[in-house]
Length: 320
Image 1: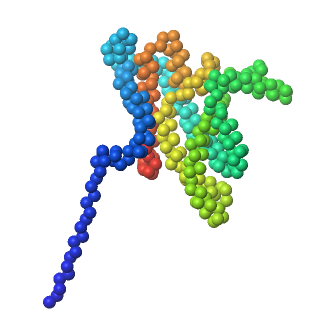
Image 2: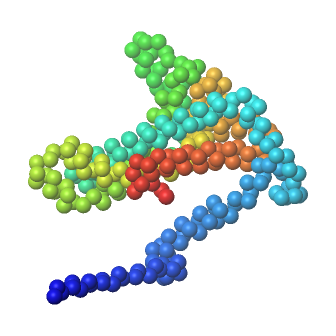
């Protein structure tokens, strides 16, 4: 008689999923470390959300937010009836794109160069010197730019005059100011932005770098195949975060450098500077809230769109 083969039934282990509170208990230390950030965003980002209603009412100080008369989209007419909505939005987005892309690129280069320095003393001094411009007031930055580019007594025109060349009049030439403003912005914030990338470079496993050196990799190969791929997650996260404020311009930089020079408005006027000039004599919270809501909606759409693209390419680098 043929013996029947005994079928062995293997028991499949049942994995019990943890509940929310079990995860809270397990990761209590990490949650405690994140608690200050959670409180900050809850207090300053989520609690003020009902205040969005101000953008749709004619705000009255005595009646308050929710008792003020409802006016619908009337507060938004301030922008689209001026005929400059497209120009202002275009200028703001293009400037911020230049600040984000070039700013991150320069910050990465600075971080890599600092990492390649062998002298610790020189590295600390260089990092400190590049870090200091971030703390200079925009008022002082505007004063420095004016003294460099002033037509009559500016530093640049003084040099040109000494060499027998014609003077340069940048304050009457709107075309040169996108380049000037980008250079000033990079000079002021690149050292500060490089701190995050420098920390990421310092966090790379030294054994990987030493193994590459043993295998004969030179400095450029080490940067290309080890450092830059390691900086990719940090760069993508910072870019996604920056997209949220892409329609919010740096008012201090533009106002203190450009001021009230109407000749330069076609290429330098952004949403903040236009709103400031238009509402300085008749300011109201409803108009300001409408402008802020317009900027926030576009910023939200930009973040969601960029996150969707990143998720399609590599979901590990997406925010959610």
